[in-house]
Length: 136
Length: 136
Image (tube, rainbow over all chains, first blue to last red; front, top):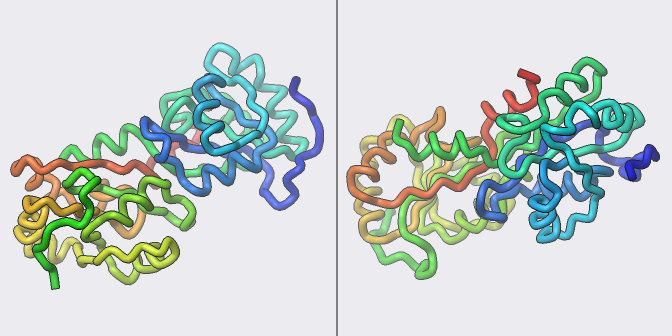
């Protein structure tokens, strides 16, 4: 299912992109997040059914790989291999900023160990949204 | 300069919108942030020169009010009056999520006291972006 071919995106920096996705309203996605998901060779997502709703809305046809806390270790080596071969891979969670309270930490640490570039694509975070309106 | 007229946006919920703006790359803005800024009667911004670059790029022509830590208290009553009269007002900072480490807290607390609705429009936060790629 996962092919180890060369990336078809010559103009994009290779590596792992942590792409923030909406936390309730599908319009809470940045222009750069949409562009990054479009040019990704693979998108790792917690629940492919949840993410399909978002990706369908924005006509993003990149291939999905299921990546959740129960298969995070199992898929790790294959994903690192793909990244080392120069593919562009995005990690998204069901909602918000990946790795904050979602899967991703194991993969990120493995990328750091292997000198694979990691790029954050900033966007919605439920924690920050709640704090911002709290009048703390 | 600030007119106390009725809002021209009949279909938008009245109140204060805390709109997150880019933290480096101008494409790091959500679709909902752009729409919200477009329909705002006024946009409160830390530095009108900084925000003008962003607003010009997205052809947003809403009126700007300078709102920074040195005039936050001075402008407070006027802004609360505008909000009570049903205008749609957005607060943005130079970058990121307003009120997190920027002006806004005094206004937000005054809105809470006066039962004025506050809506967060989630988006980039430098804190969350940094943490997400850290492999913490």
